[in-house]
Length: 331
Image (cartoon, rainbow, N blue to C red; front, side, top):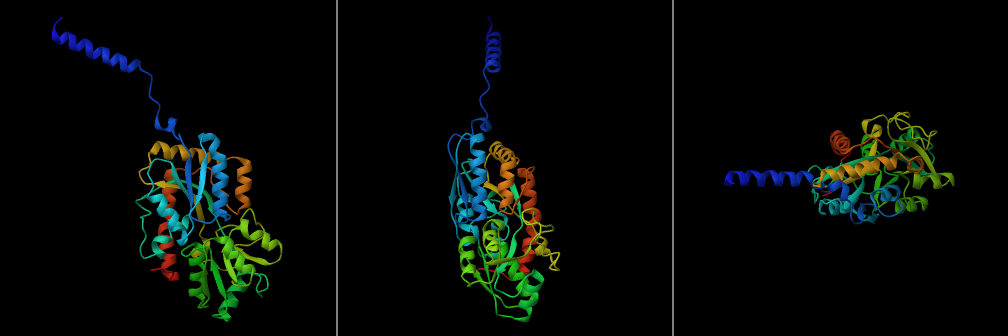
């Protein structure tokens, strides 16, 4: 047999062997092979933390591995988001964040240890996240309009709290304070539970918060709902009017925040797509939807990594303008 014929036969044998060999499992098929860490940049007990635990519990059986929530509160979500951005991009570290952590912080803080536009992969927007404006029930106003009139007529008299510096609760109130020249005092906290504890003690007068954590205190008569953010009423609080309905119709009060999963930039697309698919399935479960709505969130069942990235880019200029007007800056 000529050398050329032998080479040809060897080549054909190799091709036939490769074609007959079983296909190797894809990354999406083998992932995950160990527990997945889910960083939450807020303390345990807040609405974001509870949402993360609901989704982790529901997604774990389908993924075949536990999703372990790891709370890293502080600096308006910066500590948790920085830990996420610096983690290995292998799908074994995620974060469940409120949108302000990746949108607002880059404009509030003069320098961040990470770039939200280049060092993060946007996996899945899980919920729309309107918030409620609540006040100490001993104060004389009962609506958002009465509150606005009161602080304008009594400058320098009230304190507002926020669940973190740079959060929506901070910059939206700073915006209103600037607009009405009311000279309110801002008191920042590391999470919602300590904020509400001080409100109940009479140390803070008003704040934006979640339905999950404020509702028991409203039902007890200690706090009072003044209104909700966003373009429509919450399904969890159908009788509470929006701020827009009450005449506070500036763009910041029409804004819906959101919460969702992010991963380190460079996380393989098959892994990101698998996580997004499992998040979508979890949010389609009626019991999960009931629990999520009980937190004051609206579940999003048709998001994707691409849609989440688009939402981030669409909200970016809105947050930039809000923070510039509010003057909420941290060096």
